[in-house]
Image (cartoon, rainbow, N blue to C red; front, side):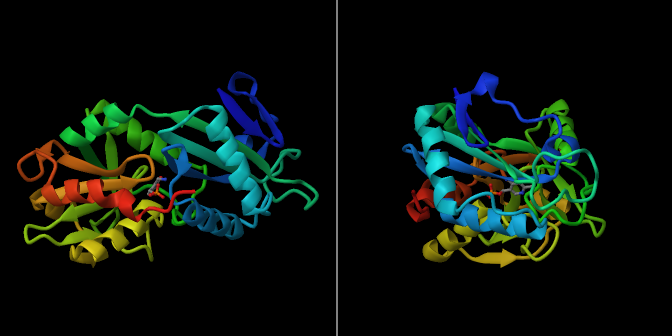
Amino acid sequence: RTAYVNGRYCDLRDACVNVEDRGYQFADGVYEVCEVRGARLVDFPRHMVRLQRSLRELQIDEPMPITALAIIMREVVRRNRVTYGIVYLQVTRGVARRDHAFPPSSVKPSVVVTARALDYEKKQQTAATGIKVITLAENRWPRVDIKSVSLLPNVLAKQEAREKGAYEAWYVDSDGFVTEGASSNAWIVTKDGRAVTRSVDRGILAGITRAVLVEVMGALQIRLEERPFTPAEAREAAEAFVTSASQIVMPVVAIDGRVVGNGQPGGITRQLREEFHRFSAFS
Ligand code: PMP
């Protein structure tokens, strides 16, 4: 497998960054994950708009033009022969003597790109049965709108989910409402067929899959309510699912050990998963 690291393509096993990279020492960096389908990048322009915003919010310089990043990401996908899978892009503030405040502007950001094939059939099987989620108290910083590599709370949440036989963890804020998953956005479908997900103005990452799905719903005339919901409402909902670039629309069939609906992926959820890529941009 091949990675791209700061101007070079190299074997993944030899792909290294400096121990004084600020990504390593401070988690001072941002990332993007794009789905790869038919060896093409899904919704790449939207991911790049979000990347630029994350960089701007953290005052990290754009490492290169987006057109150059596109070439590198496609090349890593090609060299790894990924037809279905993900491509990962990470930009950190760069390498400098350890000091919390920003380094001099002469320090250039570090760029890493990796790609990985995923098992399409296995993913489809997971989607056919659905996943379980647990809920836990929101414990992340308030700037979760930035796609930062500082993911320690998310790591711990996912581990707790795994230990409880679940795949994803939904955070619940101090008002008792679900914010989002540790690596996905959270959705329910009410008994009268309305999709509900929290609005992007507070407490969540503006998911690209979420944004595209909102458009899909418009086209399919599925009613959408952007508002918070509680774990109790979710447990009583007809359907639930999560969205992310790597899962697209993934049915949720249990929340904290209690089944959602009849314990099977819901019909609207399935329809959304099937229709999703008709509305994607491929590059
Ligand atoms: N929220 C969080 C915390 C995430 O990590 C992700 C996945 N990157 C998402 C939401 C979903 O975002 P996207 O659809 O852009 O993958």
